[in-house]
Each structure stands twice: as structure tokens, then as C-alpha cells.
Length: 206
Image (cartoon, rainbow, N blue to C red; front, side, top):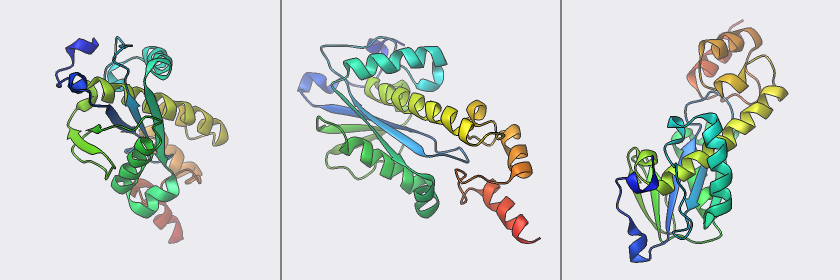
């Protein structure tokens, strides 16, 4: 999808500094939730932006470098497994988004958030359902967050072999669930998520 095909209004003409915010990792059974915030540079438009899930891994990797080198500012925020278990995944996601926006070297006047909820920010925020397919700033954020987390899952797979994390990225696939039953949860697994919690409860009964 070319940048000029995004259907959301272009507020750059009003001289508003806009950040797009998106996250990756709400559904997996292990690892952190990672959010990204991106402010694009109108003088350096980026072609090919789209929802990261609609792009090939090769294309995401290419765009990751282009975004990092050409965006006006970008930042990552995260919530770790312990925070997810303590807060619940929704609040942990909002925390990761807050941290991503707070980390921007350029302060936005408006943040477009992918989804239907906004975290509490120091700037104006607007939630946009399917924003990663509609707003270039959010699409860029989705790519940064996705590539970052996927790379971390590769490392996690080497640290905790046997679960197939590099392949399923922590999502509750058949392979992952079978490995959990065989090996038990690793420290990187989210204890508050039902498949992990139920497995732990079952083991406590013996």
C-alpha cells in the first residue's frame, strides 16, 4: 500500500506533530508486549508502509531500516512478563504504549493509537480501529514493534529451546501447547494466561 493510499486525514498540513502508536504481543503466552511510537518526516516520505501483518518478513525487515533512518523520531516501549501478570494484558499494553510515546525525542502534539482504546498521554490521543492499515504513522509503528519482538523471539528460542518460540512467536499454537505440557512453563511464560495457569494448577494437584 502506498502512503498516499491511506484513507485517514493528513493532519501534517496543519503543522501538527503526529505520532503513530501500535503494539505487538498481546496474544502470546510468553515474552513481553512491545509498543512503538513513530513520527514520520513529511520531507522524507516512506513508500510501502502497511499493516505489518500484511507484509512479508523480508519486506518488514527492509522497511524497519528505512523507518529508523528516515523517521523524524521513533521509540520503543515495553511491558515485561511480570508486569503483564501483575497488571493484566490490557493495562500492560497501555503502559508499553505510554513508555513508547514518552521515549520520543520529538514530542508529539497528537498520537494516533491503533485499536479502540487510548493510554493516558501528555498529548492529545485518538484511537483508530485498524489504524495500521489506515494511518501511515501507525503502520510504521506496527512494523517497528513487530520486527523488534520477532527478533527477541529468536533470542528467546535459543535461551529456552524446545518450545518452538522462533516459529510461533509465543502464540498458543498446537506445537507450543504440546511443548508446555511436556516441558512445563519457562520463566518467560505468562502465568496469568489461561493455558499456562491451568497447567500450573494441574501440576499443583499432584
